[in-house]
Picture 1 (tube, rainbow, N blue to C red):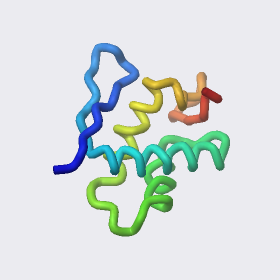
Picture 2 (cartoon, rainbow, N blue to C red):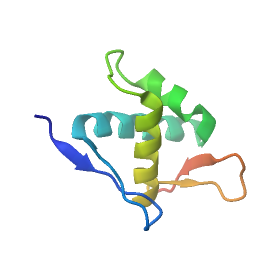
Picture 3 (cartoon, one colour):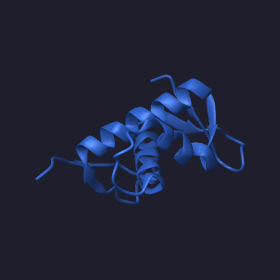
Length: 95
């Protein structure tokens, strides 16, 4: 059985989800790499950017994992939504 990881949600009233730790690490690295490389990344491009950085044998919905891990990274203060941008745009916080 694989090791699990409890994600966080930026809205304190909502719970994170329990996901496979290895997949979390892969998607986390892909998101931080994509946002870091671009400086700012529109949310609508996140899944495609993450998919391009994941191994071809990644199993599961890249969009679901990207959104879940994005929310966790927001809750941990590693990325943030650019204020005043709609639709949503992401950037690193520098933490």
